[in-house]
Image (tube, rainbow, N blue to C red):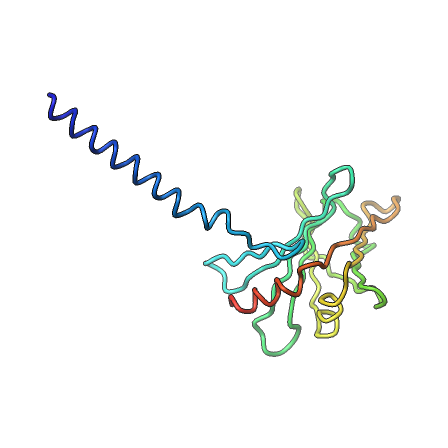
Length: 171
């Protein structure tokens, strides 16, 4: 009986130390910052494209939007695609627009809405991507309902260029 207890104790120690070593080896991956200014870079193994993302909230902490930018692997067409996720039930007919001063507003195309969010996308041509890289902020606007004024807010572009360079190197 005593030998069985001793074996259990050894196995328990082995499991304990294996878990501790595993936590230390995972910890750098979890704490390693893939942040570039106000943007977070994610490169999932299952996807071939890295994505830069930023979530914007109002001063009273209400979610306004999440923006996700992915570089296009296509040799023809837009060099990047931006996805806007906004609260559900927005007024789709009013559109969603983004502007980097002094450029004219560009309209994103709404694709779908669910109970959690509405999704709009916009292809970024070379000039638009260049403006976003050089800018400090991008203005985003959409109308939450037909009878309400538009929601207008700025998205920080700080760190976007560095994040895009890192994403390009990871692809």
